[in-house]
Image (cartoon, rainbow, N blue to C red; front, side, top):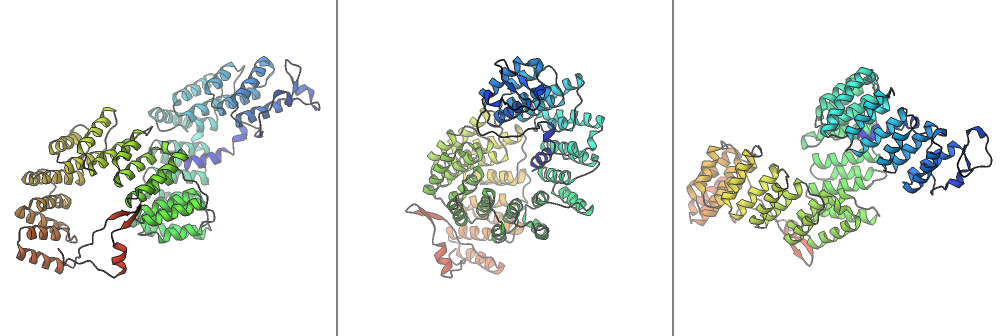
Length: 629
């Protein structure tokens, strides 16, 4: 968002770098640039073949070749200019420089740059911008900036903002600090253009304090400066600061636009934020921006995260005049996240009927719906569309495919999706580990874990949770305990309650119940209900009454709103034929007012996933009870 805003502002200064933006449909031969009707013969250039060409025609040709990315034509024109070395103005040399940069020929651009008879600020700005866009050459951009100063070429706000466009690498952070120092020395930090670039640069490096400092140094704040600052706060996870900036903006009488509201809406990500989100929605309606696509997209995402169901999000969607692929994807993703998988699929199909093509975000959003419904054949159809669309190269799409195949029961297809991925991230490996664990393939899960480590990919907390779960389900206790210690001692990851509960479950499933109880005591997690739930589940498996009773009492004490401990303890008593004790537990459950929830599963019938009679029994008015415990 911030980069887009800065690009919009940069358009204000674009003509200071390149004055001609004419577009040719085809590459223009040199001979076609000559003219017999020349008003000012002094400004004409004579080529070696006798042709007379006016400089502005050359400028147009260079821009046309750059727009067409025509390297061969660019090289031909370059050859002619070399022959005219001393007759060409610096403006034409800068055009040539820009032409090679736009064609992606950085090396040729540098050769032109070094061969120029003289260089000005535009020359340096063009090369610096080209290196920054490459993202791997920020150091070279800094060297050019130093050389620029050595040659007594005075940098301007475009130079500084170009340097500040570097991405968040270590070199970029060092560059950012150095440029900020130079900006302050030059007194340019008060310029809204440079200041906004500083804010954006610090934001990309996750340095919010630097962004705030740069914001406060701007003398005259304009709307883009405010918008970039709000976006920086949101990007760095400081929602409260973003809201304070927005309030201050309104108090100072600065009008907002759709970019402002889109960023502010992103501060609402949890159910507790719904009230604030609705207030912002009110601002949208008052400003007459409800039909604006970017604002509508942000509102749909907000409602899908903060409100149960998709009623409000659907209302916003209907009001958008021109919903785009982002709009449809937001609705599909929101439906999936809210468990409305069938609705997500209906939306996806409707989107396709309207002629819209999926992008990588759409695929990554719809695949979980088919995974949740265990719709293997339909999931494969989506996979075929992914292959045709070339979105299969996207890592998030590949990860969603692996997850979908595992959840649909096809570990072979999941393996194939994983091995054919060109790029993998930590999520790719984690999904494989978790999938193998769910399929009872613990040894394969551990092999993937070790392969991940051998490739230098650092596992995170979720990776370890998946590995522990795989060990738990497959009885690999010693391996699981080794992984738990590895997480703490080698990777320095502090276990969460899910990790502890997984270890308890692992020990309990293996029948090492006393050891599991000691683990809870030794780790100081006696107040964590999830660990006691895991232990109670293990006691149910092994019919351990005394420890099961202690575990159940602990859960009832910590989380009295749960019916799980009553059900599990009752099952233990029933298994042992202790009917009186079972009756007492049932009485306590009835007295508590809690109800046992009905189970839910999916089965595939002729290639289609169907709920296991859930729709029919609900229609018939069935209310689940605890009678059959």
